[in-house]
Image (tube, rainbow, N blue to C red; front, side, top):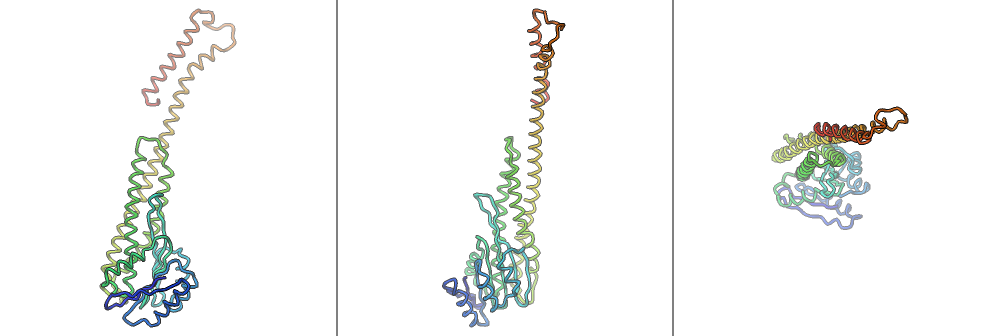
Length: 329
């Protein structure tokens, strides 16, 4: 647990030493008890225990349903209003280059009149980068707790954009392999990337309607914060359009690859059929002259055997030429 007390007038931040994990909540609660009217607190929690979050929620206060959502971390992007507290759930997302996987986590952001609480789940920590940006821009903290919501969502949306660029790069390479002359079965790779894009889409697409209301003036927020949320929402909309395009393109690439695999199979069947027809000629001639009949033409002819071999070679050669000309061989 980390806690920073911001002074709205000066924009300066006071870091609270929470000490050991077991006693961190007590230290924060003691400091919140003497919070001044021109101060607000930002409390950052990483995968907290339910008891610790409930205890903190009794003071802030947080609705029990909001606490349950924050602990479980299985929410779609959404916003909920519980009295004076606004709860916003956002999916974090990052791209793992060695495995080309899209990993997701979750951040629950609670905004009250004099506090901001972020509860993070997953390996990625956007709150650390958000805190760094606020430290470099003390003017933002003068806007009150809403600056935390902007900073965290801005970092998360920037991560979406970077992941989209990396996914696009992988898709371009995959397209090159699909349409190359090599006969490599890439169905699993295409399907795996499409599954990652679907997970990407499920994080980005539901967040768009969540962020749109923040682009309009609100009675409980400073008007100066609206342009910042418009900027974040604009970046989010562009990333959403990119992810939709990637999803559609991947579907087309998968269809094209499956069609290419079907073409390979048809080519193989044509080759097999052509060779079977070629070998059918000598098999037929040998089968006829292999029958045990006493009276058959050319049995006593001196050149019968070479003639039979010549018929086999000539028939097979003519079929080979025909199939070769038609592209079957």
